Structure formats: structure tokens, C-alpha cells
Length: 147
Image 1 (tube, rainbow, N blue to C red):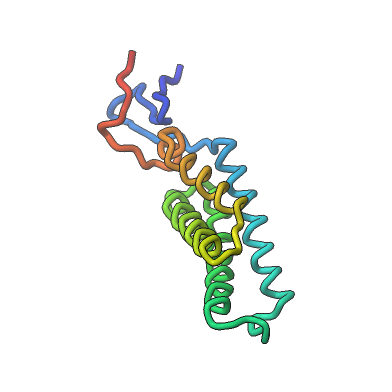
Image 2: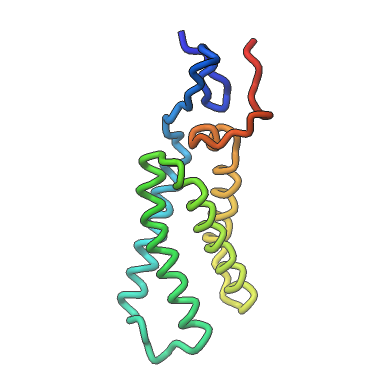
């Protein structure tokens, strides 16, 4: 019988502490949403062209940043699906930049509320204890004692 804490750490044998790497459904959902977001950003850039005459200074930089983050987002999708440890902080980075870009667009009168809300929800979910435990990021002070 396997005795686990809610953080996904195997406590049956204290000398052999291992991390349970089962992928929570929410991580799969975030990976799918990130895939759609990245593909649509790259597709929009491809359709409009990288140096469209309609873009002006800040918009060109923002468009380039969005495409770069979309490329990193594709790497995040693979990492989240494979449950590798580096995917968790990289996903938080990508979601934070997407949120910052969304806030910048909101400030300039072009809000994208869906992106902002999804980024906030995903950031909170990825920082939940169970998800951090699934990726192997658990603070030792947060372990739950065995009953």
C-alpha cells in the first residue's frame, strides 16, 4: 500500500522519498490552452507578416515579443506534458509575460480579458501545493505528517 501526502511525495519509506510524477488534469488543460495561444500568435504573425507597414514602433516590438513568447510557449507545452521539472518555472514565466502584455494592451485601450483571466487562473493553479509537488517543487516545511 502506498502512503502519499497530498503533495505527491511518497512517505512509505522515509529513506526513499520520491516524487509522484502523475500529471494533474489541470496541467494538461493549461498545456492545451498554451498550445492554442502559441499557435494562434504565431499564425497571426505569419498572416500579417513580420514587418507589416501598418505597425508602428511599440506595436512592432509587442508583436515580436508575442511571437518570441509563443515560441517559448510551445516548448512549455512539451515540458508540461512530459512533466519535466524545468517546465513549471518556464510556464510561470510565459504566463507572467502574457499577463504583462495583456495589462499593457489594456492600458493602451486594447484589452484582451480572456488572456488576462486565463493567465491569472493558470498562475494560481500552477502555484497550488499539489501541482508544485507533482513537479518536485515542495518546501520541506510544507510536508504533511503521516497519520
